[in-house]
Image (cartoon, rainbow, N blue to C red; front, side, top):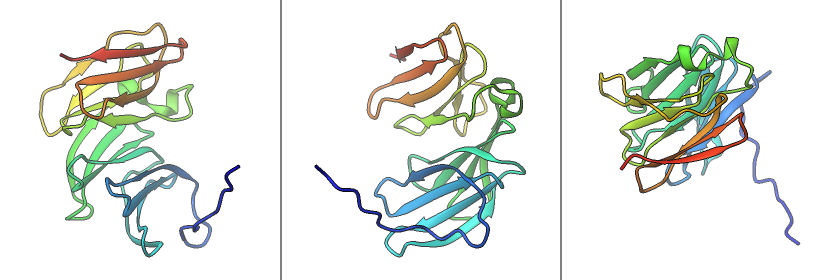
Length: 181
């Protein structure tokens, strides 16, 4: 039987806010943590210390993920705003979309919303309160597309790591595998 061993507890300061989403970068050297206070906290995993942080949203962040080229980070706020932040110019927004008509947590029955970036970093898939989930073209001005419908809201999403295939999981108790080819 395996035993579990705690490696470290990352410092968030006195009276830290609840953490809502975490993710490693591609090589596991950086960790991004998002919180209910709208802050992004960045940690150097080899030192176990916070190296930077900034206010990303005026309200809680539901989901955080690194961009495919590791020079940016995406956040999805409970207000339904998606922001892509530069990691080289901290606090600079590179791209944004308002998906509140699909995923506004203030009016949602779901606890949190998620997003997933395709392997090329060109399409962002977001969970949805409606029967279809939006797919946004990152850095493009085009609206994008929406997924095939489920019979209830879309609660989780992901992309295949190498192929143009995505997953949508739904409150209708189904998982749909969809090819864009």
